[in-house]
Length: 341
Image 1 (cartoon, rainbow, N blue to C red):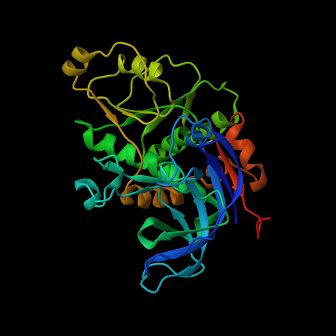
Image 2: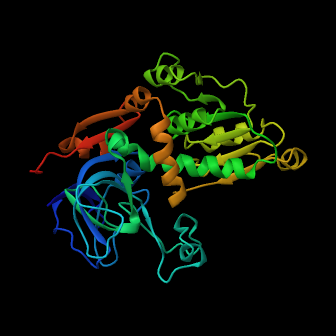
Image 3: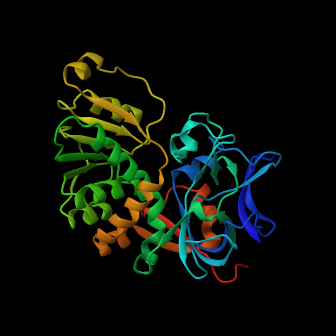
């Protein structure tokens, strides 16, 4: 098979031949990769700002967002069948498992020894076929196959929203989402179907197609942020400066969940946060409950709006998407031919 991989010795990105995946035990599932999504994490990997190959190897097959169809199931697989469509989760538990991984919350791993498909210590899905354990796959209902590639990024948003609601000390009704990338757009849509009054702030102009997608769902869009008042704030921009600026303007009881902000410098209004019972929370990855919520919410979304997030292009253009400048679409999805040549 061919795969798009990073070579950590030559510090290069390119296509290479790899072996077919193999079953390890009876709970394994073989699936054909049909679509793969590209996000900022893949571009950061291509720039060697993060990531590591599997132990004992020099290369890492990229790709953590995938949609595939099952070709074969192991003898002990109970919940999945040949022909089912699936989305893989990303993180795998540390070994030996820490307290979080033992209770199946590997998204909360406290040892730091976890692996992540296509990111940290485990090969990803930018290839033709893959094997995963049954527990690491999420079944996609037949009616959602065309939107299934959104499930993994949406699961990140679902975890953040659930965390914000659980922490808030009042009755949150309004939400501000920072960023109109795929995570930001999906977060806004998930909050919207829950009945929140949602606004999105991003630097794209007011006439940008993403702003039009939001407007069609009665979600406000603000290229210039003049009012940071909201019960729940979800940061999905990668900008520490913006997060810090908004932190200083939050209303009483407000909760901010930070998903993308990198290291930054600035003042943190601790006294104001204390006096106003405000909370800031970090969140990464997603648990099984978040993936289930993603499937449920995807079925509730405006179908035209959800499809409008996706731009499908050839699998052969994958290297350009990963290493080149970001494309205009919210979610760039590459479709594999059958078979891949």
